[in-house]
Length: 242
Image (cartoon, rainbow, N blue to C red; front, side, top):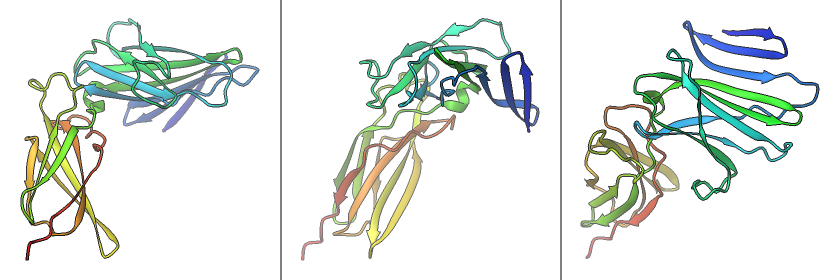
């Protein structure tokens, strides 16, 4: 259900499902064209102390600055400033023109509201959304994926946890393996797991066939989502010796 309310020069849109506000989007109305409301995506890359929000820098927009804040949804009315990392900063690993916002010292099992406002000489537009850390957990992908043939039908797949997941001893990860191949020109794939180990032996593969392997990581108890898939590793199973 979508409700609209007007307060002075501000239009407030609230999407309500089952009595809970899922997402809020607010746009300030001005006589000129304000910058577009940022499209914000938030995730927790290392539970519970690395929470990031990102949004792209518009390619065709007036000179824009951003104000990013967050606060507890039902707690004390205290607003904290996000630590903003502009596009191209050495602190940002992304090559795209993306802004990053770091939120520090968030509490577990607590609902928060993020507010990112784009401001230019023509006006302002804001994005607001509610989230809990437990819902947005998403580790970075596993690294150092290695695939070693054991014999003509078996492979050993090994990898390392993402270095950004800083509390592995308290919040372990589990992993999934996906491998793909072509059979007479038709793509095939298998998804295996979850595995708590960082190495798995795969058996019964086809000699002479090329396989592409990738691994993703997820918090052990199932919080949030699996990471993006790791960089692919391509291996051909050796042919049996005659």
